[in-house]
Image (tube, rainbow, N blue to C red; front, side):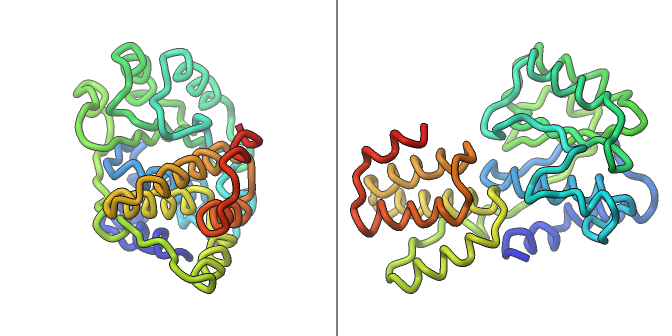
Amino acid sequence: MSDLVAAIKESEAYECIIAAFASSRVPHALLIEAPSLFHGSIAIEVARLYLCENGLGDDGCASCRSWKYDEHPDLVRPITLDQPPGISDCRKLMAELYLAPVVAPRRFLVIPQAGRLSLPAANSLLKITEEPPSWAAILLLCEGSGVPPTLKSRTWNLTFNLKEEFSPLALPETKDEWLSAIVRASKMTSQEALAMLEGWINWCLGNGELGKAAKLEKIRLISEKGHLPVYMVFDLLYGFLEEDLSDELFGHFR
């Protein structure tokens, strides 16, 4: 288990969700406020609970065995968590949510950047957050305020406080430190890797390393689009930062 996942599971907000499952009072709609850097990992860990047959998240049930890295046949979400879905996107996602579960006891929909939803998009979610199908659950993610009160009032509101613990993060300095980081990356989910990259970007910006920050941001985009396995992304990162590979290579991953 990574440090980030451990911190999520040890948080007060996560324990509240666990308690809800234990008391059989599971909310059908959640609104979680947290730094956007951690949205992906939070969404996966909460989805694991909701999609587990026993509400434990990782007990070896048929649904838990259906996870492939951070993908599950009953997990419904946009391709990226960086941008709020538009109204047409929301309608497509809701249509997927209405399908019967494939293997889990329910379907689980993730709506990112809920504080930046357009009013039409937010309004399109009102009915389903209030009266979802019996097999459906919805998670809205936000950073700060901005979620329309009409939508917020239909959800159970929780806050994950993780920023101070994980950001910024100093870049490796020696070859051994880089090799260690690459080994750790091979065991990470894509969202955990993105969290580490974001921490490095913040560290570079705070230390005036603008050139490195720009290269890290390009690598982050490559990782987010899923063009390469996580460990290969970190190999590439080492090449660009420590071995001066040409920036022209970035064009191959667009």
